[in-house]
Length: 363
Image 1 (tube, helix red, strand yellow):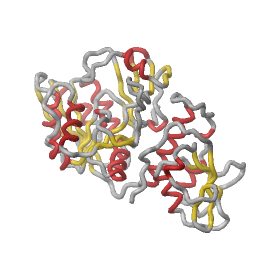
Image 2 (cartoon, rainbow, N blue to C red):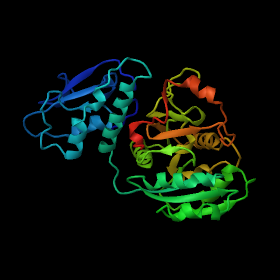
Image 3 (cartoon, helix red, strand yellow):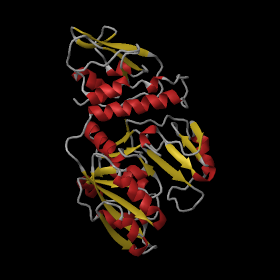
Image 4 (tube, helix red, strand yellow):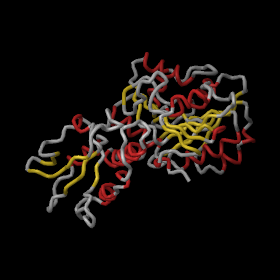
């Protein structure tokens, strides 16, 4: 059975425990590790044996998202028989410098989760380079160059762009498209064509293994698409998307993170759910057609696509939201209409300026 980070706990109740080598293999305080029992822990500190040992058990913990750290003692080195990529992550104890306070707004918990995601990427490394057809509909030509630049920096995947120009003639985005460094195909549609239909017209050109939706005004980290494919692989889900945790409220020059719904219920990641951030939906091209594509309507396209997917028997999985930031303005151009006050109300953390997760690798 594939080990997954499903059930990852954002705010641990306990401190660090010791991971060491025993006659039975890797052990935590003398016992064979049980991931469910480890979830309340902040993480595991590794006590390296003097001789080389198998790393499979340790990598399984990384695949489960259990935060791992090398020894704290100054001058203690990771053994030379540990692969460099793993050794570098385990030697990085920066995530432990922040003191946890047991609250949802705790910066220590955010840094811990970022470290966990880096370990997951290492343990769930994808075979080959998946081909992804990125579908984006836009009425805002000024945003196209920035969106294409973010697609161009995606790592570990092969991207083709399918652009739905919604009331926008191609000449207004020609310069951005020709400078993108990516294969870009496009369709032009009148402004009165429903948004969902524009997406479908663009998606009809897809040739990739997967179809991914992209919003022109949001921000995406360089591993965004690879993380979605990774989550598809380890979960076995039909549709995957991220949690929409980070939002930049542009008029207020403020970044928030929400980890609860307006109802007060926890807004978790690495869970099975019928809700993911609409700008992050990814599914196989075959499953996209099985579901029937996006609903040909002007609004609520993402919500109703997910509803149709669920009704068609597709399994939907929500992975971490640390590589994605939604932009909110006062404009009526958002298909998701909610006032800025709503987002301030549900914020568990709030920062002045643009303050995404470190996994965004923002300038």
